Amino acid sequence: MKDTRQSTLVPARPGFSRDDERDIEAFGHMVLGFYAKNGRDLPWRRTTDPYSILVSEVMLQQTQVDRVMKKYPFFLETFPDFSTLAGAPLADVLSVWQGMGYNRRAIALRDCAFRVCSEFAGTLPRVVETLETLPGIGHATASSICVYAFNQPLVFIETNIRRVFIHHFFNDQEVVTDTEILPIVRRALCGKDPRTWYNALMDYGTELKKTVPNPNRRSRHYTRPAAFEGSDRKIRGRILKILLKRRRMTRTEIHAALAEDPRRVNQLIRNLVEEGFITQSDRFVEIASR
Image 1 (tube, helix red, strand yellow):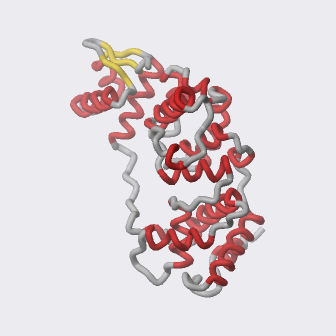
Image 2 (image 1 turned 30 degrees about the vertical axis):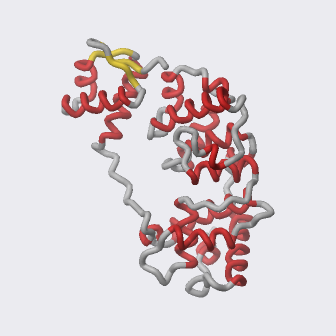
Image 3 (image 1 turned 120 degrees about the vertical axis):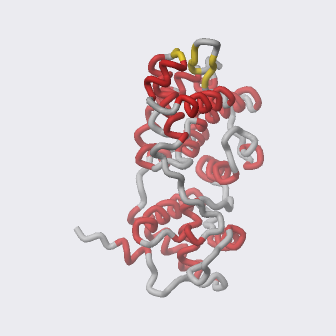
């Protein structure tokens, strides 16, 4: 069957006017119309449980939806609530997290659970400014949590949102700032059902990425993703992976398993110790027990 979504994504005229309320309304109808026909059925959209939403939002930071879909159900099955995650050994959390990348998020998520249990009686706060005090939670993630868990009509920008608004409202500019985009996001917001509106924007932005050259390249906040192959991030992940499997190793054993420059590996081990992932004694390196 022929895919006809291209015509849905790109309007007949070059773009929408930032100064015309009728255009902003037409833009909203277009995005919601696309979502009604093409919206994705994602597991975290079937719940408003704050814990489940928090887990999904942290997982979705810098990770493709397909990878999150594979890991999300298993993570929730293993750690079904704040108290279970807060009390879990770090090695167990990292083991379940394997394959997601950016392992700092696993530590941050467990630390979030501990803070929620110890400071908020196991109930996730409903205020963006409070959520932003939790580990690994920035403004966009905090806002997303409040939208999807509590259906709050908040205004925020993330990658997909930025892509949509630059493409449709700033096609006449070579450089666009978030300060310029935010007022349009605010005016376009569907206050009666922000959860559905932001789901629609996310799906529309994801599809837009497949059909036009990336509009985010014109954002002043755009940074090209760093290469993963041969990067410190990849080697760090490999160090954690082998330690999770063998639990305790000497640095000599780690050097042999990785076949990388020992000086580079030693520095990465020191970094992982400083960040709380691992501990090292005079002889052994192992996953932190905290």
